[in-house]
Length: 273
Length: 325
Image 1 (tube, rainbow over the protein chains, first blue to last red):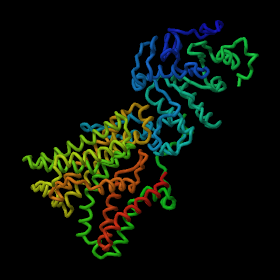
Image 2 (cartoon, rainbow over the protein chains, first blue to last red; image 1 turned 45 degrees about the horizontal axis):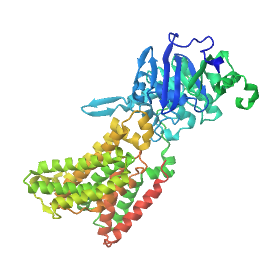
Image 3 (cartoon, rainbow over the protein chains, first blue to last red; image 1 turned 120 degrees about the vertical axis):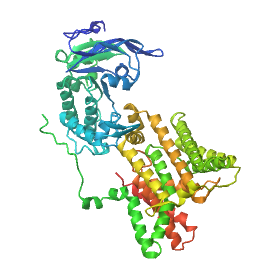
Image 4 (cartoon, rainbow over the protein chains, first blue to last red; image 1 turned 180 degrees about the vertical axis):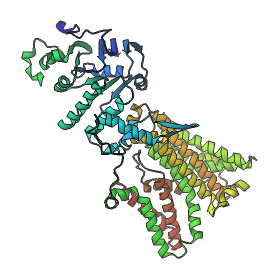
């Protein structure tokens, strides 16, 4: 364990890393006696896909909740473009530029694609207290949003109910990407998808990177993490164990860091799935 | 970059294909049923399709249509309001008592609308904030509002005659009665509100998936409460229409109005699971139920058979709804 407590490799952690969009500084979150996040510091850069990996209970979801404004950290700071933030709601984090694609996607099945893309951000024309929706403008913009990310959808007016799992994921990602956001957090984006749909969603995530967004990827799929990410943070028992550039590590090393068994890797080969 | 992309704005299948699709019929249950009834009764009874009878049917449909629009808003938001008929009675009684105290008819109408809207708001508060099941809250309110109406009126009807109410009940524009015009205006406003305002979209979102709506930052409690307030307000409009029609404020609720409101919503293709439906559908459903009773009466079918027929029609419509996509 002591081997990996430093921030490793050529990716110096902490402040003043070029292109850093979001930085968590010594974030701690406790639930009663349980310390879900213990002094965690990490950063995410624009134009990069950053992966956070770890076993169940490692603190990944608590980290996501702190970054997305669902929960406030007890100690530590979250900085967006260098400015400290105190999110009191997901809405607040979203306005600041942090979008989360939830595992259940948060799409309304009986609304059309364009209505979902603009949900709670409708383009409106106000007449006194009444906010009329500008349907045509939203439909045209929705078509552009999907086209920009090369998402193939039968019709912008189709109900989400008619879409496949991969298409839904694509719509949810487009929605997150479409609002001048700086960081998009994705929690297991391909967990429910088949091979072909997974490939498409991964291509979409790549395009977000090319567009200069920062992406935070939470995934159990090591191959996917190695395929997609530029930077990998490893968590265990609420602590940050290590940070690596993807080019400088491999699955075996990641597994050993996740399990905290660098030396016992050979004794427990079954963990390398 | 977008060369390989094709995002179609439209995808409307051919009419022939749509007619063979059961879900098409499910979307249009009320209209298809209404047309069928018009044909059947038109053939069976010579007095059915006369201008006089049509006008009478439309006036009779005005109150159920108004009520079913309120019910539709609540059901679209994945709730149900069982207290509408009682709230309407409470509103009518408030009008009667206010008039007895010498309040002008116009102000009495306003008072009625305020009281019934507040009753709806109370329903909404208990559903959204106290988190009691809508069914239980509004069932309780059904009894409570009825009780309040009986207490306030001491169980006695009040005769109300005022020029304003007389105008509402007998006035006409181009041969169409004011109650019909009022209901029609409400339907148009309701349709625009539901499909062309941010609030309407949020009602559909909350009804469709309340967790997702919340995740997107929609104030779901506010939306829920608003739908119940709309329902209360329209119960108040119903109260004014019925007092105008009867020339009296009756303290006894007619539960038929509640059944008709819920039945119209079902007939009109509004999903009882919330989140999808229309305003035109339930209004057509309300007209259908009125036509059904009117036609059966013209054919001298004994009154006791009418609720049975209505029940069968509603269940048949609900069965067809299963094919809705």
